[in-house]
Length: 397
Image (tube, rainbow, N blue to C red; front, side, top):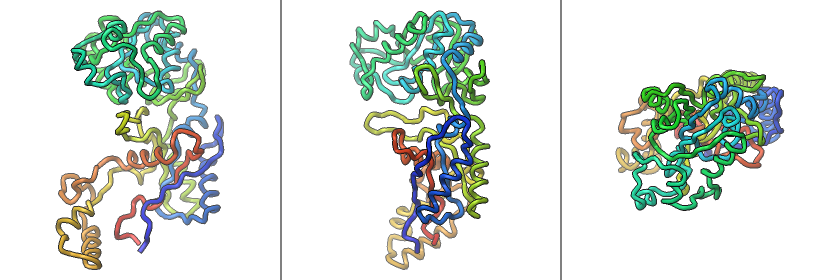
C-alpha cells in the first residue's frame, strides 16, 4: 500500500509583473518543478496560485486619485461615513487616503473591542469593567480614551484611532472618529455611508437602507468599474485590495474562474492527467492566541476548476475503529474499515452519524487554507502550490 497520503509542495516561482501571462508562466514553472524533482503527476493533482500573482499579471492596480474620483462621483464628496473598517495598514490605509481625498469630511465608525477580523483594541473584560455596553453605547474618540486610555493594537502597537485620523486629515478632509457596534448610529452624523465591513457587508447595507440612509455603498462598490484607466473588480471593488505603495493599491483579481480553468486545461494537456487548478487568497482560519481571523479577502478561493466544487464526503475513521469495529484488530480491522469506506453513502454525508466530527466546509476553502499556510505571506517565494493525494482515502493504492 502507498505509505504517503496528501503531499503539499510550495513551488518557487519567478517574480510576476504586470502584463505577464499568468497561465503560461505558472504552467511552465510547475512543469519545470515536476521534472527537476522527479515528481510524477497524477489525476486530481491540484495546482494553486495566489491571487496576488493573477492580479499583478493583470495590472489590476489603482491610485488614491482614482479612488477619490470614484468616491466623489458616487457620494457627492460631502460628509461621508465609513462603518466598521478593519484595523489594518496593509488593507485600509491607502483606500482610506483615497476616500478622504474625495470628501470634505469623513466620519469613521470603528467597532469595539475588536474589528471584524478580531484585531482587538482591548478585551471584552475591559469593556465590561468600564461599565460600557458594546451593543448599545456609542463613544466619541475622546470618550473612548477617557475610559480606556492609550489603546493600541496588540501585535502592531498602532493607535488606529490616531492613525486613521491622521490619514484623513493629511488628505485634506476633516476627520471624526466614533466607536459603535450599531451600524445605524452613523446616521446621527451623515446620511451618506460606505459600509467597510467584508463578510457582514450585505447585512450592514440592508440595515442602513432600512434606517433611512440616503446613499449606501460598500467597499465592493468603489472601483467596481475602471475610473480614469484604473484597475477594477466588478464583483468586489476595493475588497481584497492590498497596499502596493503609499499612493497605490493592488486590487483582487478579475475573471479568476477563467484563469483557473485555463491553467487546469494547459497542465492537463501537458501532463496527460486531469489537473485541477485554483486561485487562492487568505486562508479561513483563526489564530487561537491573538484571536485574529485571517480572512480579510472577500473570498478564500475566487476561482477554481469544476473538479474542486463541493464538500468532502468522508467517514470519521477513529469513530469507526473505536465504535463499530472496536473488537477487531490488525488485518481484520483494516479489511473491515476498507469495506466500510468502499460502501459509504455517495454524495453528502451531512447528518449521517458516520461522518460525525468531520467539518463539511467547501473543498476550495479547505485547500485555500492549506495553500495559504504553505506559501506564507513573507519571503518564501512560493506563490504556487502543488498538492497530491488530497482526494485519496485509506483504500487508495
